[in-house]
Length: 357
Image (cartoon, rainbow, N blue to C red; front, side, top):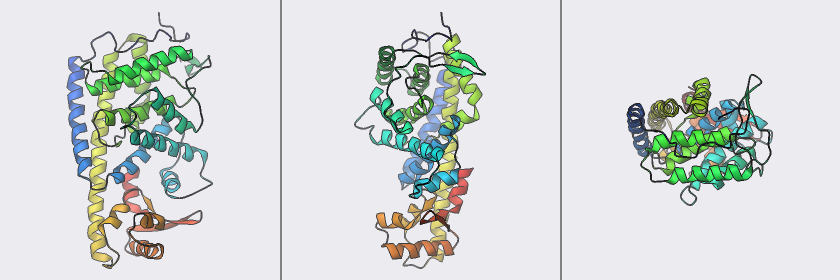
C-alpha cells in the first residue's frame, strides 16, 4: 500500500494498467494535436527559424526556472545572453544553462534519441556539475513541513525505472503521442532520479519529446507558462495519480496545457512576424539604401539585443560599417543603445515588449 513517508520503490511500471484513452482524453488530444499542427505549420513559414528558437527558448528557460524560485528579469536574461558579462548574477546564469540544456538536447536528437543518458546530460548542464543518478537516501518532497512524497531509492531501482520509461517513450503500442507525453512527464517526476534539477529536466524533456515525435520541428512550445499559471493544480494532479491513480485528470490537465500553450505561442509568433514585416517596411523607407537589407532586419529578431559582432559573424558588414548600421537603426527609432559592461548593445524595443507580454 502506498505510503508517502516510504520510498516508492513499487512505483508501477509503464504503461499503466488502466484505460488511458477515455472519450474525454481522446477528444482533448484531438483538439491539442490540431492546434499543435497549426503552430508547427506557422513556424515553418517563418524564414528565420533561429528567431523563434531564441525568443521562445529564452522565455521557456526563464519561466521554467521561476517555478523552482530561480528568478531573473527578462532584461537581465537577454543582456546576459547577448553580452560577455563576467558579473552576471547566479540566478541569471542558471536560467541561461537551462536554455543551453534545451538547445543541446534539441541539437543532438537526430543522433541521440531520448534516453537515461539524455536525462543525465540535461541535468548536468542545468546544474553545471557531474551529478548522476541519485545514490543517497533520505530524499523527501515536502509541503508545509509535511512529507507528501518519497521517491524511489537505490541506484539500481532508479535505473530500472528509467529504462522502463525509455522503453515506453519509444514503444509502438498505439498510445496517442500527447497522451504518452503526459504519462512520461508524470513518471519522470515520480522517479525523481536526481538530487536536484528534476523539475527543470522534466520540462526540457517535454519539449524534446514533441520534437522527437515530429509534433514540432523546433523547441518552440512554451509549456512552462501554463505550469506557472496553474502551479497548484499541477502538483495536485501529480499527487492524484500517485495516491488515486487518477490518470484521466492528469492527462486532461496536460493536454489542455499543450492546447492553451500552442494557441498562446501561435499568437506570439504572429505578433513577432507582424512586427518584423512592419520593421522591414520602415527600414526600407527610412534607412539609406546602402544600409538596408532583409538579412539585417531578420538578425534584429533573433533576440531582443543586438551588437556589432552579430553583424560581423553573419557577414552583413565589417566591424566599423556594422557599428554605423546599428547607429542608423537607432536614429530611426527601431533600436535603442545601452552600455552593458564593456559592450554596446542595441535593444529591439518593440520585440522586447512582445516578449514581456
